[in-house]
Length: 326
Image 1 (tube, helix red, strand yellow):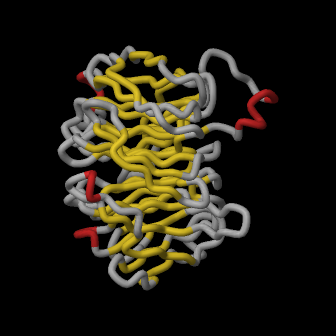
Image 2 (cartoon, one colour; image 1 turned 60 degrees about the vertical axis):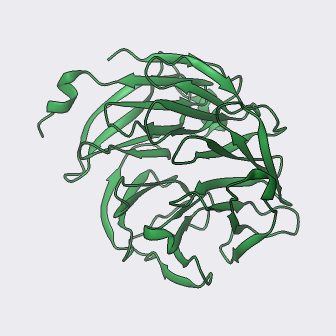
């Protein structure tokens, strides 16, 4: 499995997202410019220029026509994927950390960071079909969690919102009323900041990664802990194969600790675990800094990782990967 090295960002990667067809890969980084690549050969298609802060997150609509990006410049921008033009800008009083389109692309959930006297919040916005009719107003604003909310995603049928972040608690909210429905158990839950959250292809369960050096698999409806995957270093990114029972964890030390440790020949690896047996299957080395972003192609035949080193590495699996026996 030879990785394709995709160099287009000048600063650390923050987020990776495939479109639903799996032919495009969107990458966000701290260099202000989200980028779109061909997912098969890693060719750079184009960039989305307009932010003037680190871009933390993005999401692409089901039909691959619209892109949402959230940035430290306190805006969320809506783009035309094909032309790269800005269609709309949502302004907030604090950095936007996470965005996700609802099923049907008529709504989006956005989380904003605590900033000055503002607390963190989860915003629900209507996304108009015609960008000229787009408005700024929120359908719903949810406040409550302490610290940054690193990720908020839609639950099944858009009825709920699942949020997780610095206060280590996973919460499920009613997306109509904003009422808190469930909280993860303190005992079985994460002990440190939750950095990442990704849903299974069918939405029945989701995976969280945390600085407590573990990733956990949860039932979406009941918030029951199903599995825990332990590793030796903080987890910055998680991904789940849509094809096989594999989960991938990426991480590394905090950027401040990197200089004091061995950096030889890309020591930072994406570790593969068996989803059911919770055992490590193998790893993919290569990055020269912590892995900040991971994403699986929706067909399950390739995955990409984005690192603190500014590279996106695109891996197409060899045939023998699909026959790994545990």
